Image (tube, rainbow, N blue to C red; front, side):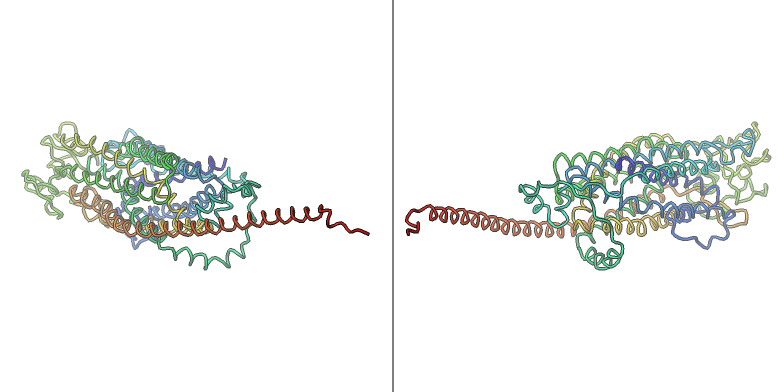
Length: 575
């Protein structure tokens, strides 16, 4: 029952987090804010000097995300520690993989919810939809991002209910009692002895908060004094930076690079990419249980899968698309390709007398296959409202379709994305089990808590911010807010976007692999020390057992000798 309740809690928090990421482009357009500020909201770090934003209501989204983070923080360290405490050792890895698999299913529904809401206009119910001339594929479309937050919030509240009816502790298996004071090898030796089978379960002692507070600093010092744990922490922080930054902006990358709508990008993330991750996490737990991988086995398996996924990910650099043909930005009005970051390049002889605004963003597609920033800049002499043109003109609403070559490349991108996601996630469960097996049992809960805190503050907060800041440097055309400040980016340099996005993702993982080499050396030394201690303990136990047997034999012999003397007739006293 606890496993089911924790899985539901994991599902709800993963759904909320993934839905947040699926609304990134919607929030950018709705509040006219750049990518790095979206990263601030996603990481819930701090409110910036962005007073020029036309709508400050995004702060409420920020505060809501802060509260969500506070509420979710205890779920992972305490939940996983609870499972590892009260489940048998051979089942713990499988149970943890089940929870993590369910947590991966959450984003499936989160991205599908994001896909559904992205198709619904943001002001549904307040405007006449017949007057809306743009479609979800238009760069100016804003979906009903707020609707999904209401649904995700209701599911999160429901996930809290079962925990009110669960006991504070469960009966503890005997192997967990032994783990508290013994190494795994010592535990196995004691479990095999007849005396260990006299009792199998004992209730957990009530918590003494005063004692816990008193022992916190020495315990934390002992935890941080473990070189293996510190290296593991550094590796996971770096890899989480890579993972969180990549996942946060992947739907946006699909939109900008391959010309897909926000709805389709979220749908593909939910239906194709995330299930591959869930299958990989579960398969990793099954492999650990089937082959009974130890600490070194789990470390090698996790490292091997991560390295293989890394090499496969390098092929993403070859799956690039050219920049869209936009007059005055990626090519001149005469058809010569070349990037321009300057507003004057938007004007030419054909629109010089139209008194066009260079800050407007109302793209139209000409019959020549070139996108123009606005009907005015395309040379149109009249239009009927923003976002619509008379039918007798030679420009149609929205961007021109992407090139066929890029369209054909997209399925290969999806296929490689699924394969790499599955391979990398295979090492997820072994890597997590490694965390709770390389430290002393009494430090487990604290170790998980510190790990969660470190990954949230040093990866979950900064990664979306600096990923967004680097992505902003590839912007070719910025929108303007109502107050004249800089708004959301309208079009990116596709090639630079690909290099920045993939370069950051793979560069961080490259750094983590160098730390893994040091981690393997420390872990091997740690395992050898454990084996040496186990052998010493074994020898002591064998000597003690021999002494007990010898004492027992001496007692029997002595008893038999006394009885023989008592029965000897020569000892009878004669009167």
